[in-house]
Image (cartoon, rainbow, N blue to C red; front, side):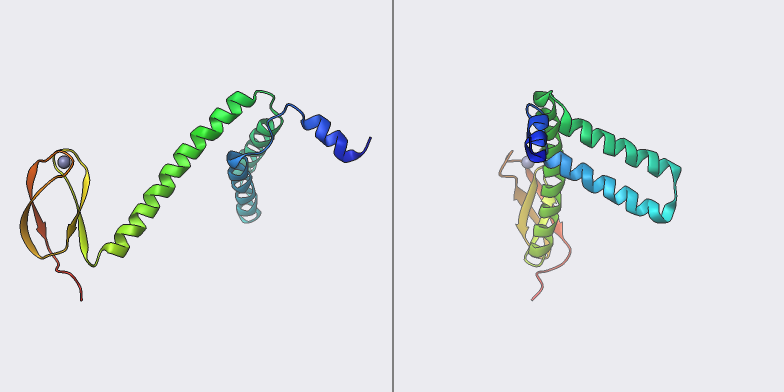
Length: 139
Ligand SMILES: [Zn+2]
């Protein structure tokens, strides 16, 4: 039997790799690289722990549980990614719009950037409130 077939047979019914696997691998490599300079026993043990968890997941036969872990991870990581994308998009629009949070429902509204005090109505909860815009639209 060829080596590749043996690997294939060994991996049969096991979980394998997913997004969380790649993330954990990056964490492991980062820890090890940092530790080249830091020489920390804690980082070393932490690195080994991450390594063990990573391969435990790859070789695991409990695929449903591993899949759920990956879904949770994707949800968390997707949330962080969205938050950053949101900030980036706001900075881009900052010249012409300002962003104010509705005091009633907490929804963030995009308002045209016109200097002064204005009253506005939240489209989500239709509460009326005043906003003050400090800087006018940049030309
Ligand atoms: Zn509202």
